[in-house]
Every structure is written in structure tokens, then in C-alpha cells.
Length: 439
Ligand SMILES: [Zn+2]
Ligand SMILES: [Zn+2]
Image (cartoon, rainbow, N blue to C red):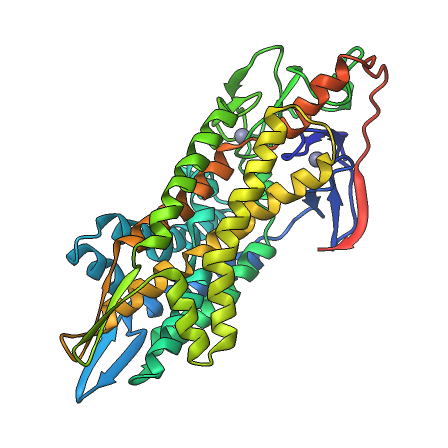
């Protein structure tokens, strides 16, 4: 195996890639983030999961999810019903976001895996494989069928109190689809797909390409790392170039990262107020109309004795957004002020907030399901409210803010202060933090 260079995507520390046993993973020696898994030679397993997922996705979109029966009237909903209801009720932003996260992104994710893995498995060349795999990196965080399922369970809990609700074939298809998509993701290392898609004459920088003394805190501009395929590219002092492997633009750091991250986070903080003040939905039941905010929705679940669901909704809709806003502000502020301190922990906090933020979409999905199902006029009906728009905005803006932030700045900024007082290290023998952790 060559001594190919690999950079940590979270702190940019440069490592020399080494072979590791199957089932093991390598971590960054500086920040502790996952670097890569054992070399992947077979792609048939993730392909089989992707094909199964596509069949389940077709079922999930062709049959009713829930059937709601009350006072002799029956309503059914499909995955797309919530989107249509939001659109008809004058909430295009919610319609687009629910369509994107529960239908379009999951479909793109599954189809892209089949489009790329099928030719790889049979050693074929199909046009546009690199472009498709590149788009996948953008689409992946927006695929939220797992969050949709939780929203479905919350809606189911609320409805069973007042009416008869029957789960349809699509409900069971979604329940099976989520573990299958999870298996598709865990059996596949996207980095190894990039290796198979790379041009045959591509030369990877190795440890032999490191010249002269170097500050071990940062790569400087000698090497740049592609944000999309994570290939280390010889920078030759340039600040940006085209990645020779995936064709995407490569920058030393994401441009205007900190100011964009701050702007999006501040917008989210402002929207957080109307998200909690305005009702997320208006419920009409037997002639009486009541507006539900996020908080009153949780307290209604508590009064109904539905403690497990109340805890899930409280965590996803109230705790997660507040904690995310506070923690991201802390990470950005510490980076802005070039504070040293616990850099590993700060990187970990950033990674966790990036992962959990999407779970706040539970309430938005719940409203989309309830509004699509409960349409019995004065007997029982549910309309979405402006609070849901603002809340969806908070979730999207905090996600975009975390994506805009470049976590390598955490280490750069602290390193700047350090390098003013310390001599740069003369010898940079990087090692791989190969650990026996099972993936
Ligand atoms: Zn690292
Ligand atoms: Zn690339």
C-alpha cells in the first residue's frame, strides 16, 4: 500500500494512510474524528440494500400510510398528502421542505446509490457517475425519512385518542425502509467509491511530497483537501483549484465560513421567537377551535398520559433547537476570539450538533400528517399555523449554519495564536491513529 496522504476533514491534520484490519476504523490523532474504515473491495451488499430500499420506497409512495375513521367518514393519506395539503392551505415553504426531506431527497439517495454501485459491481462505465456521487454529498443530510417516521408515530398517538386509526401498507414499508437505508449507509464507505470513480492516471500525494519544515498545526497552502471527496490535493500555494478526482471546487477553507455561519445562526435565533409564540396548528374538534403552540402540544401529550411521546417531542422540538443554538454560538464565538482551550471537545460538540439538528423536524412532519388526515370540517379538522413555518425555518437555518461553518477554523484560529509564540516543528512524521474500535 502506498503512503498516501489523508487529511482529517474536521481539523485538517495530515496523516499517512495505513492498511487496517477488516472491521476496524482509523481515527484522527489530533481531534479524534473518524478518518476511514478498512479497505472496501465489495460493493454488492450496499447495492442489494439500495435495490431493496427502492422497492420499499415505491410501496411507501403508492399505498396509504394511515387511514382515519370518525363519525362514519374515512380519510387516508399517502407520503405526498402532507405536501399537497400544505400547498393548498397556502404554505408553499412547508410544502417544498416536506417534499424535499420526505420524498425527493430519500429517492435521490437511493437511486444515486444504485446508479453508481451497479456499474462498479459489474465493472462497467456509465456517464455521469462522478456527478451523481457528488450530488449525493449535498442531498444526504436532507433525507429525513427516519425523522418522518417519528412524526408519524406522534401523529398516530394524537389521533388514536379521538378516532380509529389504521396503519396502511406504506406505514410498514417506511418502518422497514429506515433500517435498510441505515444498512446501505453503514456497509458502504463513500471514500472507497471515490477511489473507484477516480481517473485511472490520478496520482495521489504521498508522504514523499512533504518538503521542508512545516508547522504541524496546519497544512498551510502546501496541500488542500477537497470538501466533497476529501482527497488531499497538492496546492502549490494556491487558495483554490479544481479537485482532480471529483471535479468540485477545492478551497483552503470554506469561503467566508464564519460570517455566513453567524448570519444564518442569527436569523435562526430571530425566527425562534415566532416559532414558539405562534400556533403550529389549529385544531377544530366538535365545533370547538383551539390553537396549539409547540409547548402546548407537549403539555397536551403529558395530560393525556403519553409520557414517552411527550419526552420525544420535548427533546426534538424544544431541547435540541435551544442546545444547538447555544452550542453553535459557543463554537463560533470561541473560534472568532481565537481561543485555545478544549479544541477536541469543541470539535466533538460541532460534530454532534451537526448530526442531531435534523431531528427537530418531527413537529413539522407531525403537522403535515395531521393536516392531511383530519379534514372533517366542524367535526374535526386541523390547519397548519405560521408557527410551523417559523419553526421549520429555525431547523433549516441552523442546519445551513452548521454546514457553512468550517470546523478546521477551530484549529486554525487557535493555532494562529500558538504559532506566534512557538517555533514550527521541524520534522513532521505523521502517523495514523489506527485504533481497534469496531465500526
Ligand atoms: Zn482531526
Ligand atoms: Zn474532490
